[in-house]
Image (cartoon, rainbow, N blue to C red):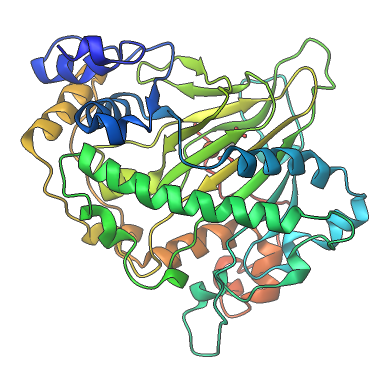
Length: 397
Ligand SMILES: O=C(O)CCC(=O)C(=O)O
Ligand SMILES: [Fe+2]
C-alpha cells in the first residue's frame, strides 16, 4: 500500500523493515521528499521522511519554503566572494575571529584521505547569524562562539556589494526552515512535534547554527581522481546543503557501503544526518558518511547550513519515547547491516554541547585557540603551537 506512495520506491523500505523483509539498504538514488506534502498529505510525508531518515540518512527536500530569489542571490554571491583579491580574503582569515568565522584555505594535507590519487585545496567562508551575544568576563568560554557582531568579519561592502545582506538573509531562512523541519522529523519518529524542542530550548544565543560557503577548484591533475573532502560524518544535528554548480562529485555511502552520487537537483536542498542527531536519538538516526571528489572540470561551489543543539544541552540527558514501530525499524536495519543495535554514550556526551563544539574547534584551529582562548590553549596544546595544521574532521577509514 505504501509502495505506490513512495518517491523512487523508497517509501516501501519502511514497510519492508516493519515486515522484516529485505529492505533496499543498497539504494542507488536518494529520495526526494516533497515539502508541500507536509501540508497536503501529512501522513505520507511523515512516512517517506521516516523511511529516508532511518534507512537512508540522506534526502532531497523539494518544494521547500525558502524563496527562490533568496537562494539565487547566494548562488550568485558564492563565486564572487572567492574571486576577491587574496589580500582581501586573507584579511578575513578565521585566525582573526573568536567565533571561528571567516575565510579558510584548507590545506591538502588536512583533507588527506587514503585511496585517492591526490588531494586538493578547498577554500571556505564560515559565518553565523546576526543574532550575536556580547561575551563578558565570567561567562562560559563557549559563549565566545557567538560573540559580537563584527563587521570586520565580512568583506568591505564596496568590495562585494550585497554579500553580507544576501548571506545573512539566507541564514535566517535556513534557520527558520531547520526549526520547522526538525518538528516534522520529530513527528516522523512518532513523537509529538515539539518533542525535540528540548534540544534547542533556551535563548537563541545558546544556539549556534553555522553556514559555510565552499569552493573546490577544478582538478589540475589530468585524468586522476582527487578528493575535495574525504569521507566523514558531520558533527551537526542536520546539514542542509545547497549545491551551487552542476557537479556530480558529492557522494553518500549507502548502508551497504557503496558510494552513491548525490547530483544537484534544482529547487532542492540535500539534507543529511549529523552526529549530534545520531546521539540524541541513540542511533535511531545514524549520521551518514559522505565525501566530495575534486571536480575534474570547472570549479565547484556549495553552501552548507549546519544546525546544532543548544549550548546548555547535554546529549546524554536526552531520552525520547520512540514508539515500538520506530524502534523495530531501527533494529531491522541494524540486523540487515549486521551491526549491533546497542548504543552507549561516550564520556563527552555528558558535557555541555557548547563545550563539545568548542573543544572540536580548538583542536582544529590552534591559531584561534592561542589568540582568543588563552586559558584553554595550554590544555589543548601542551607543547605550544603545532607545526602542521590539523583538522577536527574525523576522516573515516
Ligand atoms: O561541498 C559539499 O557538497 C559538502 C561539504 C561537506 O560535506 C561538509 O562541509 O561537511
Ligand atoms: Fe559534510
